[in-house]
Image (tube, rainbow over all chains, first blue to last red):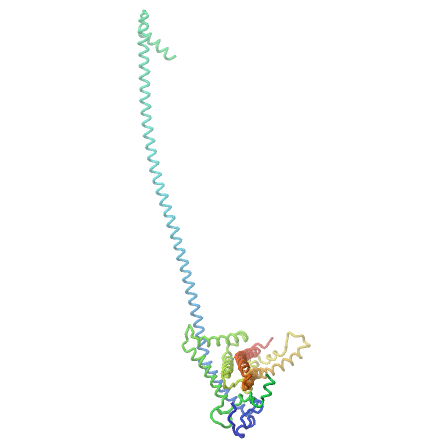
Amino acid sequence: MATEPINTELAGTCVNEFGSAIGMPQLCGEWFGNQIFWLVVALVAIYFILSRVALPRIGSVLAERQGTITNDIAAAEDLKVKATQAEAAYDKALVDARAEAQRIVAAAKADIQADLDKAIAKADAEIAAKSAESEKAISEIRAGALQNVEEVAKDTALAIVEAMGSTADAKSVASAVDAQMKG
Amino acid sequence: MAGEARSEEAGLVFHPMDQFIVKPFFGDGAVSWYTITNSTVWMALAVLAVFALLVLGTSKRAVIPTRMQSVAELAYGFIYKMVEDICGKDGVKYFPYIMTLFMFIVFANFLGLLPTAFTPTAHIAVTAVMAFAVFFGVTILGFVKNGPSFLGLFWVNSAPLALRPVLALIELISYFVRPVSHSIRLAGNMMAGHAVIKVFAGFAAITAIAPFSVLAITAMYGLEMLVSFIQAYVFAILTCVYLKDALHPHH
């Protein structure tokens, strides 16, 4: 830095004739005014750049980003709620469909049961009618047989009595046979 | 190493402070208050860098930021949060001032690390102007906002009554020392790092030491990158702390 020699009168009290510093250049009062003046200029320039342009701009960008993030998060939560609602609706539909299916199955079962019961009752009635008829026929047959037995017994008794050589009127024989058969 | 250096001292030239000489940028001549000097040029570059980062970098106003824009947003958020955390909500309106100081210092520091660059913030004249501006600004603001009760800052109510006058004296002294420490901390750090690098560079003239010298310069350079940022950060955070005292003077 200090290679080119400068004139002593230009160098002043802070720099020697070889251009080297005498003591600390920081303490050279001759240069204070210059440094302070340009420092104030620089600081004022930076202050106006910052306060007029840079800081409001960066502040608005940051605010805008914050807003965008907040909006996106809100939208995401909205969508999440919607998804949950859709899931709930789907579940509900599934449960409804199951219940409906069960209801249909139960109804079909009831129908079949009713038909079945009807058919069974009808069959029972038919069976009962048939057996009553048979009962009647059997009792008729039985009554007929008893009467035949009576007549046969009376005829036989009359014939036996005649064969024994005695006469007997048919009425008394018949009443005797009746009495015997009742006893 | 030191012994060797001394034996060849005739060949070694150390001018570690020459890098801080302020001189006219165009031609020779006296340095008057309006002269465009090397200091002026590097301050102007810092202003341009701030403009490039915070204005050109954010020109697209993209919701999904580019790299430049996200660095600008990072710087904004960093200082904004610092002001808000330390000074509270009512300190946020002073955010542009603190941002101005921080951006200027951080860019002046980093640009000063370029080889052959000049570091305006290594000069006490520069840092003292900023520190005293903060000091007077904060003091005036404190009295305007709080009236005479701003003096309650020096009256520690939580201390025993007997101790309070003593503490008030100490507080008062420390209050007036603030701008001095505030400015010398930054200027001293910047100056020391640059001077040390220059001294190491001077040793590189000795062939045997040159590799160590290069290593040492590299290490110092890394350290200086750290210091450049940290000192800007410290300057800004102390400004916030002083501002907090002015806004809420009661402990």
